[in-house]
Image (cartoon, rainbow over all chains, first blue to last red; front, side, top):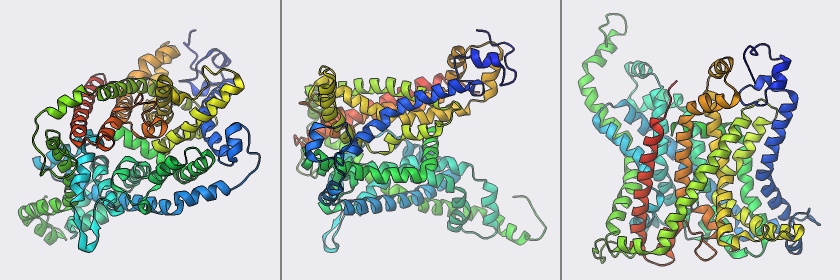
Length: 308
Length: 311
């Protein structure tokens, strides 16, 4: 099939018919081909949507129906299983725990990693370069390599008189979250700081800004897009994290969403109708967050991955 | 700073005069700004990592170092003689290999498909990415229902019970289930990165190639793929390290079962410590795990970097 000379108008009929491949010539793709591509896309999407649909319809079924018929629609529609699952999971409390644990962790990591990245970027000494490389290379250490000593080491960080302890509290979890999230966040901010013109910082300094004001008034506003990216990436990883919280939280009242889901499943594995209602409830906040911030999330993942 | 005699000169002069002092003060101030991060980092990652290496050479029981004795390489030789550990490590490699191939094939294909101009391509991107936002633990539970309940019923309906049965009760099928759920989770993620890569290829390059007579397949293999090497680097690294560290799906989908036949290395380390109460040996395994991850990452970065094409 020769393509020479067919680079003319998009309406060139030969081109429209002859190109079996739409990969690199979107404009030439005919209506039929576009429909074909869309059909292929939606067919593949069924593999993503199918399981979610199955979970959703089965979460309304009675225990009897869920055993005999997993494909059909529920014969009766009832919120009863949701109420029961919500009560047994202590869903409201878990949601609140997750929410504040994630919110505080993300807020603090954005503040701490941005100022650290700036300080590392603006000092051109051997020490700051070494420190930066050290921070980044820490991403090579898998969590499994530090998890056992971590728990043992922080168990000693306790002030019984004040009721302060690092292992077994949500603020302790926040502390660990930030520690593990720092390398990637610092790395991302470090790249963004390079884009901030130094001349701007110099003139602000001449106008009498001290370093602290300089960062928060001049530099940080310029880092807002990256702050959103870092924030979203960390929200995703903290919200879904199971292993770390499972090692440091024992009190059922402090369980986050992944923890309460896990314990709930352990208890009610046979009662699928309850378990599925619980699953739908845990997925719902994620789906809402996705619908609300979809564009930001996808953009964040792109920047995070390409620069990470 | 250049010399200036215009208005505002006094400020500039003051700024210039104090530069040496300012520099010293700057170092102090910048160090202060870094302190919170340093403090967190040293305590959360640094010290536990060093302690972990130390414990791996002792008969540590999960509590303090005092009371534990230095035992040399005993934990390492025990770990290397633990056939469950070696099997789990090997299984993780196989798992990572499957993930590397299938996640990237599917992700790249989806990216090619969804960078075409047709109506619902944005909506489809969102759909394929969605599983990535739902954590691995919850994905595993969702699929546990599909593989154990729905598949049993499909077997009854279709009469094909050699394919549609409870996959989680058979070694090989349970492992396949882990791979499938892993692909389901990761393909949308690498797709996003491939889409970013594809969109960064200037259209005049591919157009010039097609004027020069390059067919679609040639354009894909000679132009698009070489220019996409940075995206491949990122994605291969991401899939490999995610697969080697996989724990959540392993826990919620199969919990290592049936028996210990689908136990991946991360789960083996966790279970040695908490189920079998051998903290020192678990820590030796964790150090070995770290070394392997470290080597793989360095090798892979070097291999893919050398093939990179600059525009």
